[in-house]
Length: 134
Image (cartoon, rainbow, N blue to C red; front, side, top):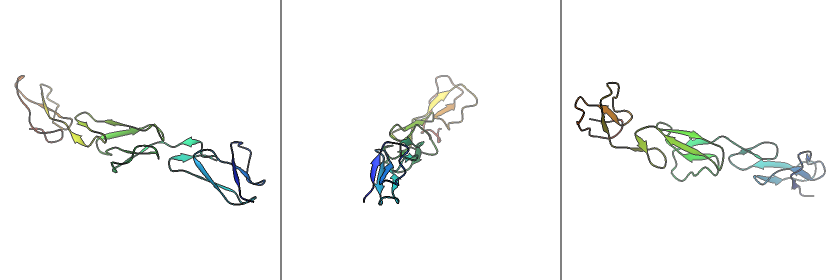
């Protein structure tokens, strides 16, 4: 007989029923049941959302644990279906890939990498974008 899914964590497939939640796919026959987790899910019954990972693909929305987020300018967080991408200062956009306009700063340590560059005149102007300020 074909295997069926069960939310009972004690089900091992020996009676044709295996612990497998809504994020898993059941296959096999009695005594040989398997539960294969969807992308982004883990655990014996596929009930545990995995930590999110960054993706360069703009179509990745976090539903499978991958979110469009620049590995260089964004910080990924959350778990499958609840992924977040937090942009570094000076960067924005859905995947933190858009460099923002530069601004002048009186802070000697500002070198333009975060969109702020030291400019000796308090009313000075800065040009370029984050990472390439002038």
